[in-house]
Length: 536
Image 1 (cartoon, rainbow, N blue to C red):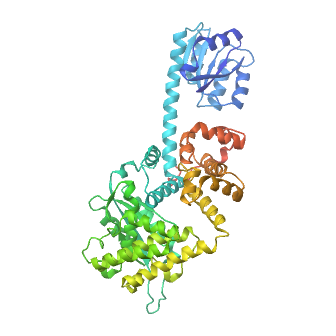
Image 2 (image 1 turned 120 degrees about the vertical axis):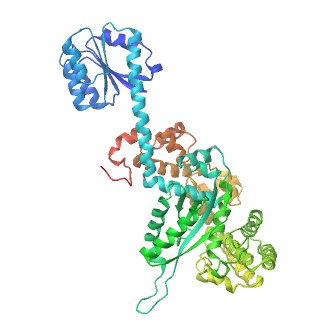
């Protein structure tokens, strides 16, 4: 609704204008009245108004003086002049001050409706333009980039169902076409530089930030055909989702190698994953890129299906093995893994190596969730050459079983503090996934608890209910969006996991005592957009 102020010194005229047309049906709300220009300026100083209907012949401050003041103080305000005097000076003043219409009293119903309808169309067009500009500016903002990258990481870590929420989020981040597009993932990491005469050895650890910046700048050059992202679990890597169009993968590979060599004096190693189609396949495509990066160079030229990026173990097999570890079924895990390793070993050496990496990449996040810090000689992705020493199924099984055994023992040894550890893990999961459709039953099942028991345990450990904690987490991020972006309430609600804008507004008012819109208006100084475009 656009806000209207009626300015006329006659009460009957003001009442008549209120009743002349159905203002709400035309998209307007009569926000107030004033009997002269001075009262009207006082009103405008305290409330934002979109349209003013004003008489010209008024005491204290007439319409001409009022229009002059409006043009100077409120240049975007729309004005419609309604007067009983067909006076040239009045008409000239109206034109000079860009009045949208000049109507003579008594104004006809259709004439008034036509005038305000034209003004509404103008306001609508301006609002659409502003909304589009806000969206463009937000898409350039750092926050948008962070949210988009977080969404991509979620896609490569889970196997999402493409429901309406996922479709909306994909459209919001301009990824909707990627669901049907063939995609290849690429893992990129710097190789340590060995010492030479006069030069000490150099490790990539201190060069992560420049490597990050360089990778993102190169990805941006491909204009939507490449998306760069990081995964916190692998801090030494940059990852790329690459549209599998002709030449794109080769072009970005060459650009990365050339620029890293020229500007960082390092050699880059790239792992190219198998082509996948559909968000539900992105996880396997991502893991295949990681596994390909970890493949020893001696296998690079071997023309086998698994060496080129295809996973050896099926997704169902991986889920079953993961379940054995989570449930503490070590012997069953060892028996199943041993059989898979034997089969891969008989197939080919590259297939065997790929299977070892695949199993390791399955165990690593389980260890992380359990709070287990792996030793340096257990972090296979940091030392891909180490896999060459695991040259038999027996050696590989001992290595993998040792990690699984540590995870299971840690869970058993900390049985007294197990509930606290799981609640901490649940809170971390909420922090990472607050924007999705979470519920208590889902979280309880993830950590193998009965929902009722988990609910009581969560309240006892955290000091608030699950839904209170979830809403507070979402609201923290919603406040950041209100302060740092020009997004509408509907987008903010969906980005932070609230079911709709109305529910978000009601929760916000209950928590802060004011509506989201009022909160944003009270904090004009904090509304900013971090744009990559320089100010003109």
